[in-house]
Amino acid sequence: MAGTKALLMLENFIDGKFLPCSSYIDSYDPSTGEVYCRVPNSGKDEIEAAVKAAREAFPGWSSRSPQERSRVLNQVADLLEQSLEEFAQAESKDQGKTLALARTMDIPRSVQNFRFFASSSLHHTSECTQMDHLGCMHYTVRAPVGVVPGYTCRMCRFVT
Image (cartoon, rainbow, N blue to C red; front, side, top):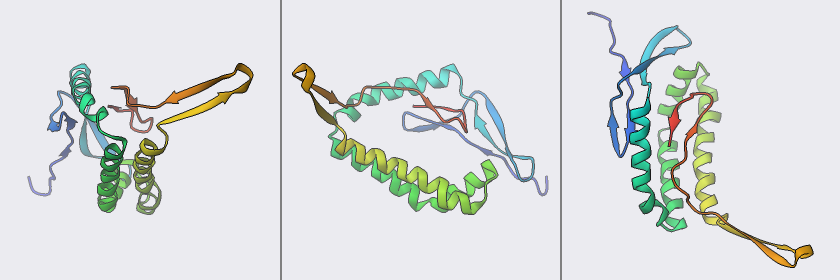
């Protein structure tokens, strides 16, 4: 059919692979009201597969030094920053924001989030507080603990 564009079909990224989903949700371009892509409507099977993959990856990830984890997170930030324009275009289309806002706030903020956690893994691993009135010390040690669910309110998608 002339003039018809194929819809972009996003996939889940689980265990190092892009995988199709059993169900999808239409995503609308707010500026036109038209469907421009389909996003996974991940259900129990996809979530269980993601949690399983994350649990299997945990021993290797948690055994890396804080410096290595920091390096990996900074690499993610670098890649995101190198693709800033592509992500800004996608964010603008998906959320109906101006390109200027996506370029100067949304994507740079994502880059900075990765850089914050990269730095945090180096500088916030433990602390000790003296509790004078009790004559003892309070130690806090921060270390990877395993799989945790997370979601962003804006997108309401399950991530690990």
